[in-house]
Amino acid sequence: MVNQFPSWEFFDWQVFAFIDEAFMGSDSYFKLVENNVIDEITGTILLIGLVLVAFSKEKVEDEFISKIRVESLVWATYVNYAVLLVSILFVYGGAFFSVLIFNLFTILFFFIIRFNWMLHKSAKTLVDEK
Image 1 (spheres, helix red, strand yellow):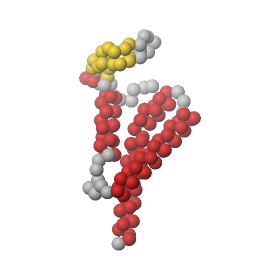
Image 2: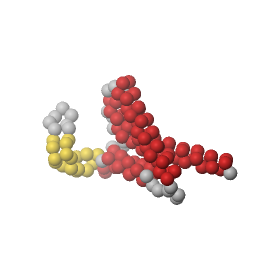
Image 3: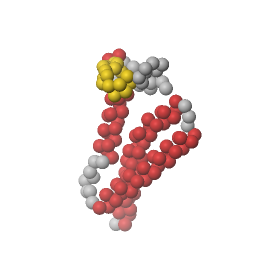
Image 4: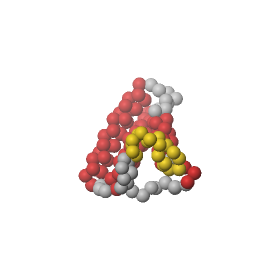
């Protein structure tokens, strides 16, 4: 798989690795390795941002919001695993690895989209009833 991130030498750091699987070489365990950490930094920032957005309290956090939150999380889990199942059946090679990496974040994306859509829909319904 081709690294999609820029490879600036400034981000080549010595980092601790539990496992470092060398291409055409032996594996290393529990040691310092040289690594470009741009993808780790990007993934960490994306993950923290998505979790903060997904699970921030609303201004009015009542039972209805909690119900929408739980239903959205269940729905996002179903959709996430449906995408994973389709990927297992129809995506092969290096592209499958890319899909797996993307799939780590999709459950939060699906949750945020569905939760905000349901909030918008319920707010619109309340305005229409008045």
